[in-house]
Length: 292
Image (tube, rainbow, N blue to C red; front, side, top):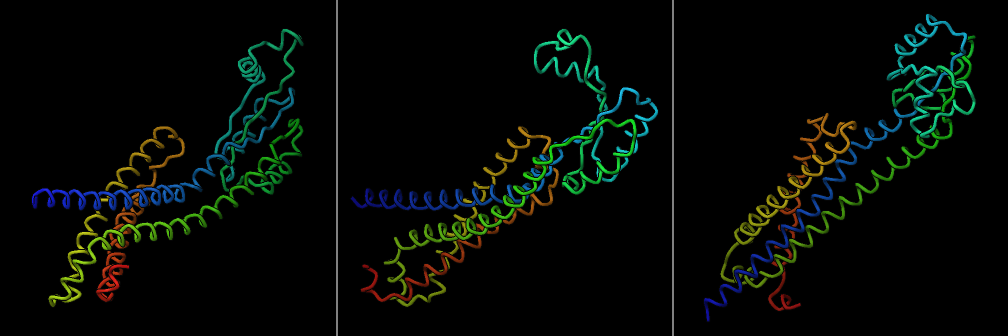
């Protein structure tokens, strides 16, 4: 009978520890993923900004030397990431591949123009910079037109500012929620042993002596939960890097190491503080208050 009861108590204890570890791991995992988002938010925003193209259309009368000089000067400009020269023949091939039809069979000639596509660095993708580039090149006689999506640039910059603001707000809120959830799980685990705490206190054990094994066990659970969370974060990071290699999620290993270390330490600190507060609460309760 006693053996059966002991096994039941052991299973109950393991179940309690398991639920605490899962709670800690899940919360730290979500917090870590949010940290990955914060670290890479600018990188993702810069990636999309650098897809904006300024297309410079050239006259058919433009000389090859003029085109080469223009492309070299643009490539050397501080705002340029790269330039691509697209001939009218290449443009026709691209359009044919997109539409699946050869439009020159209908019009009888190639109406497209030679052009230079300019991709800007992310910090220069603003309407002010683009207007300045347009004004600078407008006086060249062999340039027919300069086009870019002005509305898209403005919308993109506005959205980046809004997203950055809300990501910071959500990060702060989620950190508070994470602390509260882990604290709640720890308090429930300690609550189930409140009678043991009070019994030890009644036989003369000091508060520090009673608190020590509870804190030690909770920190152990916090370490296990943090390790599980870090494994999950590593898998997410691996998947993102394989799926979106151009974004370079692992190009800054120092920041990633700081984030992973921060999540690990946070798991220890939260569990330590939560257990300390929870045990202190039950140590200060009177015996008749343990039943409420």
